[in-house]
Length: 178
Ligand SMILES: N[C@@H](CCC(=O)N[C@@H](CS)C(=O)NCC(=O)O)C(=O)O
Image 1: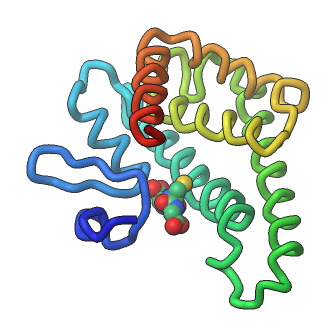
Image 2: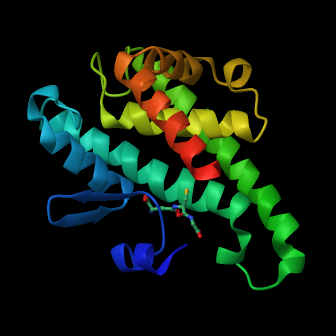
């Protein structure tokens, strides 16, 4: 991580959004900033009740699934100094991740809507897609284990904007490895 990046985000973490003269960090804040660019799209929910649910989802995904689950699995050194405990910690983190996926799947199944907050796509769905793809990356059979979650992820993956974003991602990855 470069010093230039550390000046941008002293927490030394991604994602970071530089927008106008503002630097925004933390997923719930970044998604709120992106949503404000195009208010008509209601990317943080179409009314207060949906927005409340959006933050409920985002804080859970950010704090528990990302911070505890994937943080523990990929960055055990954040939690303990003793490397001999890493294996135990990672095992627990993997269990946390699976528990989160079970919870998410149940919530989506019960809601029985096209997207997490209702009938329209929001930032919550975009964040849920990230964790669906990470689940595949750590070799969890997401489609068999969590069908309601998988159905939402596939719906999101088919969106034009998501296909376009993936193309940018591939192009950027090629630039980084070049
Ligand atoms: N709470 C932060 C978490 C950010 C985070 O943990 N990012 C990870 C990547 S997924 C990171 O930058 N890790 C680099 C490191 O730990 O050195 C958010 O919601 O944006």
